[in-house]
Structure formats: structure tokens, C-alpha cells
Image 1 (tube, rainbow, N blue to C red):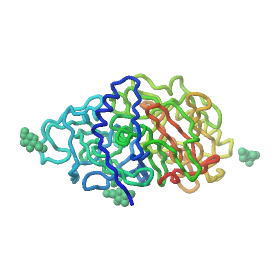
Image 2: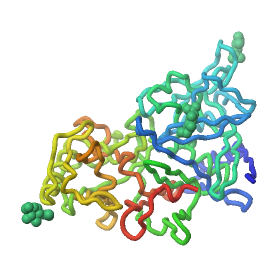
Image 3: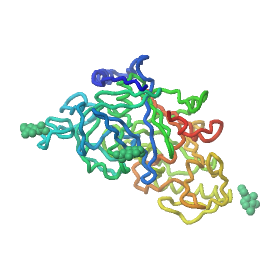
Image 4: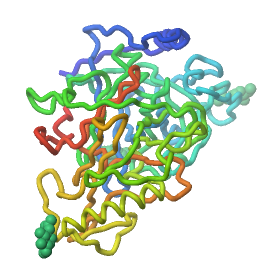
Length: 435
Ligand SMILES: *[C@@H]1O[C@H](CO)[C@@H](O)[C@H](O)[C@H]1NC(C)=O
Ligand SMILES: *[C@@H]1O[C@H](CO)[C@@H](O)[C@H](O)[C@H]1NC(C)=O
Ligand SMILES: *[C@@H]1O[C@H](CO)[C@@H](O)[C@H](O)[C@H]1NC(C)=O
């Protein structure tokens, strides 16, 4: 039944280069009825590493490749040393269009490779530095392109020819969940999947992400996001501007591919907490600010923020007769679950509000996203102390994102978010979205 469409990316790269040179131009390309409105990557959670995993079908003949999802990843990279065979692989020559796109702002050139010619070893090939955001390691790698087959939102298989990625040595895979052969990069860069898919399929440079402890999804293209017949989740978005960090706090490169939002204050149990002046703001050198990450399993806060949030939380929990018990690593604040009332939508505990551009734009974190069961009778506040030297003030991590639908609209530079879908009138989980 599955029909297959193939699109070539190369002509669109030229177009996108031209577009990127025009000031204030709209990067969206017209869509056509013969092209999918969206494509889906299904995402599971690896229980031991807490990484979010997806898979793609790459190469000719097609091979299933499991990859760790990095929301802020600049490009996709895979291990090319371990038996990569494909008749559709093309290495990107130095200074080629793909090289310019992949290497923003700078890319190198491997002039000679003296090994056996293979993907990842060819002469005069563009090189970049694939980054393992889990381990923090980087290693030089060739830029190449190959075919990729993914599912469209209507369930058919669609193929992209010439998807640009980077080859990495096997050693760079260390730290990824068992079976993962690299990282899929969903960052806001020319080589991130949102840009490449939107160029290939001519749909908007938008995607939605709904993570789950079981089965979630990343849906590229526009909505609707139907959780069940008649329930389009895109109608319940609150919007906040997406912020571009001019300097990557992780790699030091120009223009971070990561997604930042502007948290202005934090409330715990409905009360605004007192924070060090300026501690939440994103500085010119790329430090500070709040970013969203799929690589951090839990939200990380700079020490003074962490201390302010946790002490307010402990106070409010005490008022609800929830008593503190010895903490369990990596968490610093744990409670006995004896007095905690549980509902289908998670524990009834003090709420944590990330207040954004105004007092109506609030990302509320409910019990299902704040309390982590660590053992029988003990749940911990799922936040970790990032230290006083933390590069980013707040990193909103995976556990806090689960069963929240997020829509990243790159051309409009805004994030749509729903807070927990388990609460309120919706009462659905991200697994309902996965078609
Ligand atoms: C690259 O060129 C050199 C000679 O200049 C040759 O010895 C080598 O085999 C070539 N490598 C590949 C991977 O083709
Ligand atoms: C890829 O993931 C699937 C599903 O989790 C698993 O069954 C398969 O064994 C994995 N492949 C490899 C090579 O680890
Ligand atoms: C907490 O416990 C005290 C004494 O047992 C009781 O009077 C109070 O109503 C309880 N508060 C809540 C919020 O349950």
C-alpha cells in the first residue's frame, strides 16, 4: 500500500541560498498537492539512558539506523566507519553548496584520505565537527548526503534524496543509548532536519514535538495535530518568541542551532520567587537564558535558581502536609508519597510556572512533569542543580517536556506550547498523536 515519492534536495539548496541572501524574504516554498503535508519521526525513550530515540531508513539499499534525538543539533551525524554501504552516498566536495550549508559559519576540507575509499574517507571532501551532545565530545567528520525514507503524516513512505549529514568515526558514538548509531539534529540551522525537510517537501519550516515515556513523535510540517477525531491540539497553543542565541554555549560556534525562550520569572505554588537580578537573561556572550533540550533527561538550573525554586517548593509542599525524605541522586529534594494525592494527570503538588513575555504566557509544570518516582514511597522533584558556573540559566529537560505538545515555528520565530496535555479538558497523552 505504501506509495513512495522521491524528492531531490539539491536544487532547493541553491534556492535557499538565494533566499537567504534576500533580506526579509519568506523562506517558505509553495506546497503542492502531490507532496506530503508533513512527515513523522516516532520517538521512544530508552529506559536506561533516558535518551529519546528515533530511527530513519537511510542509504541504498535501505538500512534502519537508530539515532538519539537532539532537538538543538546542528546536523545529523551517523557512524560511517561501521559497515556503511550505499550506492546513493555522495561526499560533499570542499566549498560545495552542501559544505557551505553544513559548515555555517566555518567548515574545513579534508584534501586527502589515504584509507580505503568509503563513505567517510574520500579526497577533497568538506569536513565539519559532529558533536555528541550526550558525551560532549566532538570529532572531525566528512560531510555527505544520502537518501532517506520517512513516514508522511498520512502513513505513506516518502523519500528524500541527498539529505545532508555528517559521517563520524565509531568512537563518537560512545555515550549514546545502546543501538544508537548517531544523532538526529533538529536544530534551527540550514542542515537541521526542519530546514532540509521543508526544502525537499516545500512545507513550512515548522515542526511539533511531543515526547513521551513510551511513544512520542516529532512531526515536521504544519498541523493539525489530531489527538483523536475532532481534537486538534494546535488550537490550545500559547505562544512565546523563540530566541536565537548569537553564540553557542555548548560549542562556542556562532549562532546556536538550539531553541531558547525568554523566561522572565518563576512562580512556585502561584507565588513569584525572588531570584538574583539578571540571572535568567541571555547574555551577549551566549551564556545564561533558557533553552529546551531533549538530551538532558531533567531540567537543569543554575545553583541560585535551583535553590530558590526548591526552597519555595519545600515550603509549599510542607503546607500540603507532604514531608521531605532523604534525597536520591541526581535529585536534591525528595518527598514521601504517603500524603501525595495522585490523579490520572499526576501527583497533586505545588505547581511551577515559567513566566514568559507577559503574565498570561505561562508554562505551567504540573505534578506529572515535576515529580519523579524513584522508588516505592519516594518521589523527587525532577530538577537538578547545574552548579553556579552553569552556562545556561535553565535547560528545560526531557521529563518536563513529556506529554506537552510543542510547536517550533522557525519562520515566525515562535514556540507554541500546551503545558501538560494530561490536565484540563484535553486529558490525552503524546502517544495518542503518533500515527
Ligand atoms: C586520494 O588521493 C591519493 C593520491 O593523491 C590516493 O593515493 C588516495 O588513494 C586517494 N584517496 C581516496 C579515498 O580516494
Ligand atoms: C533499533 O531499535 C529497535 C527498536 O527499539 C530495536 O528493536 C533494534 O534492535 C535496534 N537496532 C539496533 C541495531 O540496535
Ligand atoms: C495538614 O495536617 C494538619 C494536621 O494533621 C491538618 O489540620 C491540615 O488540615 C492538613 N492540611 C492539608 C492541606 O491537608
